[in-house]
Image 1 (cartoon, helix red, strand yellow):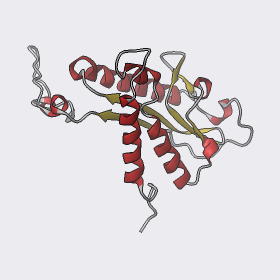
Image 2 (cartoon, helix red, strand yellow):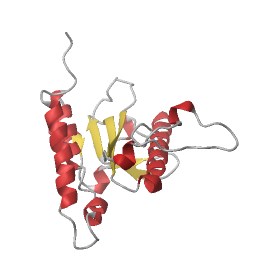
Image 3 (tube, helix red, strand yellow):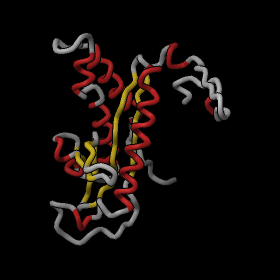
Length: 194
């Protein structure tokens, strides 16, 4: 049997990350009403950084390959825009192995859910075109000095959406179009199903 790509206790590690999310949201903020201060501060999903670290270590990568802090260390060049700041990058010997973005959706589904989809699709498109144009080739890496790795595979791109499970996210939502029929996958689908 081949070795697992996930570390032992992976479900527990993910469960801890979800716990960090809800604990962080519940602390509130003086700067913004309710939990909005914590949401905009971007700390709610830090537990998933630890999930990434655990998977990377399990796959034999050293801790210094995982970048999760410092804006300049999380910025990649784009193709349709100058750059994008990601949540986690995994880089080994100048080779970009993984690019991760973490988002959450709690409430306001009708106002924000489609925006999240557009954002994910746009970020992925920008990253893949930049990659195809050589933006992440080891030769362009500003710090690594050495022979470029021979592996030509593109980086792994991960987009994690932590979605609140509640009536508003799980009940069927109507979708209509006067010009062309909605794709069957969306007919009567909830935000969770989408």
